Image (cartoon, rainbow, N blue to C red):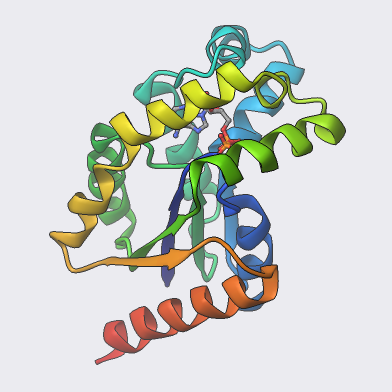
Length: 196
Ligand code: ADP
């Protein structure tokens, strides 16, 4: 199985690229942002807690996203693999993922980090906010706070995966197709490495 973690600040293009990668490699797309928005729409217990945090640009508790992910892994155990989009977002989440995957005989194959300059991220998110209606994409202060949270809590995952020899970085600027090809070549290398 191919289990890829897509890392990147809000607006780096994780969702766009994940959709294409899922199709090419026949993987299951696990986006914790999408799962949380679904919980909010259903006014579930998780949704009620998540709504305030998401709209103010903060992360939801590690245990909440980890339990959602664990359920999905169990449900899609027989798939070709997973694209983790927006998870893990903290070191404890990465540790939880590393402890839950072996229960199913799996592990993270590799992590690709997409990067883009902060002003570009802000521009993309404000423009996404106009169509998506996402409250967290409409206010520049909240967007900058999300980017700051990314640097503080999520960026350390680069070191975490690099220490396992599983990190590749990719530029998230250029055409969607160019970025996609860069990601595919990183993933193909991970695959070859896994098959050696
Ligand atoms: P983006 O990457 O554009 O910020 P997402 O859809 O991945 O969008 O996430 C939206 C929000 O959902 C995040 O700002 C955060 O509040 C919450 N969230 C998503 N994934 C996680 C996670 N793994 N851990 C904690 N909070 C999360």
